Image 1 (tube, rainbow, N blue to C red):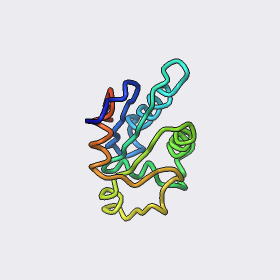
Image 2: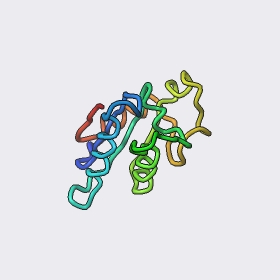
Image 3: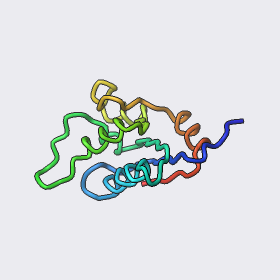
Length: 123
């Protein structure tokens, strides 16, 4: 039986990256959760339209937060990020279109993360 990692948070993001603030807030929470004050291991799984969050080369409008940079910064500090392979394929995206460090994931990967996490949140 898989042991629950007491300090692991899995965040599932379903929303499109721009237009509403849910994705921005999810990434802000991921960042805060990895801070020295909290020290959680964080996983981020992208489903549906959220897979476009992982697309490299984003050009957000002037004055908008840059979610590509936020996600890249999280990856650089050890946050594991996976994008649903089926969702990517449905949107014409491939591994080559993604920010370095984002892995293509499956529902089985997500199921394992859910089982191993102390907390699972969806945005």
